[in-house]
Image (spheres, rainbow, N blue to C red):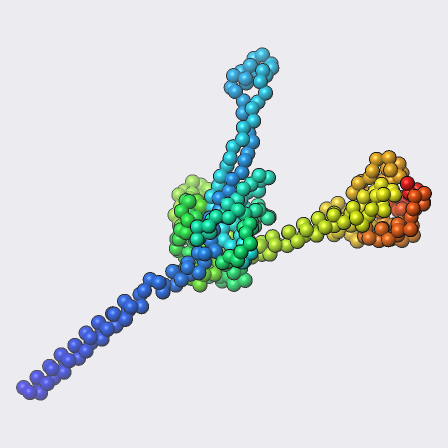
Length: 389
């Protein structure tokens, strides 16, 4: 009996130890389940300061008529009153996110559709509101590039480290859903390279997710659990083209496309500034050509040559001809190109200025002008002797 009691006592001790370990383990599990340490919470906290709400206003003009005026026009053949023009202010809400410390933002083109009198207001996650201006956009990719008008450093989402976009990975949609800022929805990456048509608009190579995408989310980021960009919320399919209702089918522009588009957008201001500087240099560097012969000249950049269909790397463009000037009287017209001054070929305004430096009033200068089309075809050149006035 003693041995049996010892055996039962051993079993009891074992059970008590097991229970104790279970309790301790459970407490450890509960201690590890702190919501603040969840990957999704950490990812949202990482990107949320860079997510913005975008509010745009633009004025459209519409012509309206009184129905009675249409009646008079139909039966009596005249209008008594001219149609009235009314101005309407259209507003749109969307999301976007900052991509560098300077405050550049990427969003959907349809959120900030370009207009001459477009006003853009951006609200950051800390509640501050800034004015912003439109830089560039692309209807084909439905992406736009804007910038906050402020001199300060902003938190941003790094486009140099994007998500690998693996099927089944957890994704989080962040944005301004139906006007509520800092809204979050969660799902998985359901598919890649989807081509869809929504409201007669075709979208290509999108990523698909079952995370909820609602009006106002457009332009906001879709991220993974590391806070890396998966894409930009773009469209939600509520019905198939056949009218069948759907659930859990949201689509985003892939991060790869976003990154490539942003790199292209960043080059546009530089290109515009260069063209502006070239145009500004006409008045100063070509003053001899204008003063003595009445021609305004501009350098023929590769972009300008391609746009006009002219041969690259040859000549200087004539942008204006003063009426009754020596150039005008010789038949030279705007859009022609000066290819040679005297016996020297020219490819820049500065060269023309240098060759004209010795010329004075009464000097005779020979110019070769005309147009050489791309490919060297359709050569229309002529030699003209102009007398400086």
